[in-house]
Image (tube, rainbow, N blue to C red; front, top):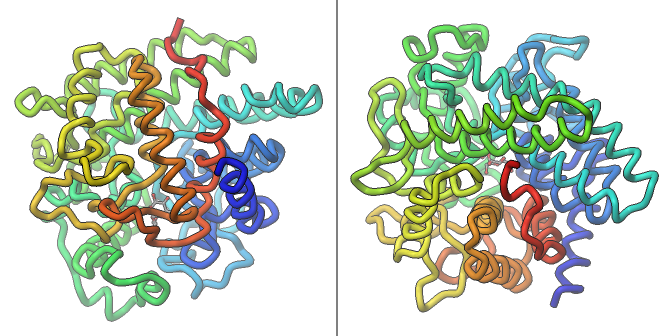
Length: 448
Ligand code: 2M8
């Protein structure tokens, strides 16, 4: 089973390589996506470390002067009509010597420092030239990764407590998760936008799997209002309609500082500053995103100060923080094992993206129920960090079994395991390689 899955995952990554970057999938996502590149690098490095570095480099070459790393870098060879909203809709001006309309203006979870560290620590098994390549790549990336963190904890600290706010559900990576429903209900839905603009996702994917028109109208409206303000971040909490702090996004922000501490150590820079930042982020996540009544981590609406009522997989991801006190790690594991996320008797599947017991649990609509490999990969990493080795191994085998049985799909039906969304999806393929290869307890488990 391992060799078969390994070979087919490698074939997916070969097919999706576009010369200097990887596309998430050929049909639905024909450009480069930010956090996809990080997940992809984690697995691609086993078979082609040079491509893993090239992919990360292509992404960071599109970094804005203010430090933001765009959530999509547009491929100039892809036609405008092949993805919506494309370059013309975003209308990003030229910056840093790059052509205009080269990217979006949103961000995604900053997993790239974690990915860079993973690719670096695997370089050893590829020989001396790969180690030299990895060292040079870290030197190039390090200041850019730091600038990314500074942007997120500076410009995006709309809540004033040292966490990053996201200004659009697309920034979360968990696009139409029920975690946003409460905050999104206050965002105007101008349905005439859908007469003006054509939703290309519905040409290539089943409407029952994709966000509703009302949600999509809100997505477009949020981009247009951010665009009208020149994509500036001043006064977000006052002027922007959607400003939230997400436990998944901020846990990755904290994990990035731990990875930066490791990278700084290799480069002779100061790791301590990153460890201190990681600690501050963990403390702020606990202070602001932990709901003591339900003993879960929730999304915080910065504008209203309210926690989202939805229990989503994003609330489990703070487990990746090594400094998270055991009390909270235990609570996350209780939630993970519960009927909401746990492996129910009738299935042997990884955790769904949303509470299985919720009335609006949706087995098909993406991020509102289906199983995703990337967030389960994060959850497993967290289990290893905090010593839940048996559960981590069960989750690893559940993921490998699922992808082997159903194929490298974008996501999976949470009851049957059937593959849904895009086939030949890059991060599912890449993370399968990592899950097949890496059974170790990560060396980064505790910041020294
Ligand atoms: C999905 O998001 C894009 C918009 O960015 C879309 O729905 O068109 C999400 O699953 C996101 O996490 C992912 O990065 C992207 C590409 O795989 O697709």
